[in-house]
Image (cartoon, rainbow, N blue to C red; front, side, top):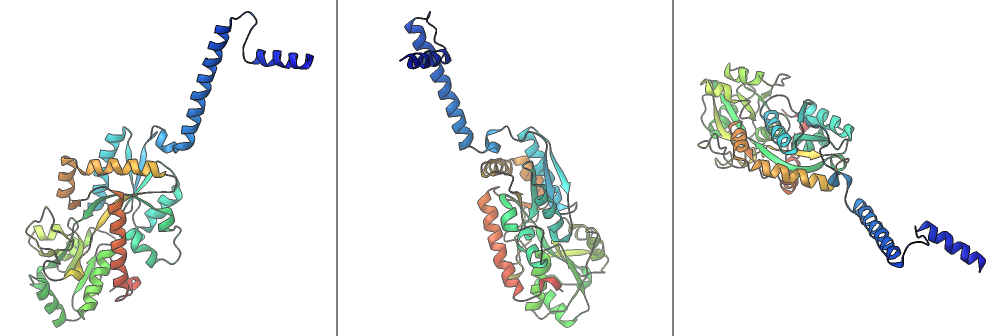
Length: 352
């Protein structure tokens, strides 16, 4: 009994009861402690229920947006989104250019960062084509790249030099068939190159592919007749067209471009084999939680609806997409089907 009495006194001392307090005061103090304990328990439960990135005030510092292509149309679009996201998030979004090797340099650098304040801006070809070009990539596109939001489809065009004196795709085919191996062509990276190489193969045509390190040089060479066909973005081929030294034969995207409403698509002209989506989007890495990826997608979708952003992007040669994760995933899946068909016709590691 004595031990029980001592133990009870010790327990009472721990709970803060004193012999001088009334029963009402003791009950009130006990209820207060229970309320505090309940609040603490609920807070701990919430900590386990919600990922840190979703609970914290993100971003806590500037966000880095890695871009896999050099200055030009796609790069400019990335900067427009970076500026708009920075305003929405209240923290700078800094663009870091990492071009080269069909996008693999930029993607590899992004994957190695493992940072929840770093995002990737790239085209679908970096996911669908690059793994087929390099045997041992330093990353796995399925494991290391998480699609967040589709942003734009880069407007892609088929442009020809005035040297060819052709005004349609059938006339182009006839001119090339009459002069096998006489003319040269080049393209933007990934899909444009492989789609046009497959087009040549399907039609039994021979042209010489010219590779460039400087992305601005093909425009000049098209205008001067050193190459006769250029398959790339609208902004990377418009200069010789504007000076009257070349012309567009078709838009290669599934739909017409807002800035070229009178130029038909290749599909409209009866050549769906030349169709290219040109989709670009934002990706996250493993360090970014699903909740945070969803939040970023919501913000990108809202930006895609802003009239001033849409005007800037369309003027720069882009079709503005919906900004959703589902759209980006669907576009990648569709591109993979295209690429699978192309690899049945040509060796994409040696496309000519």
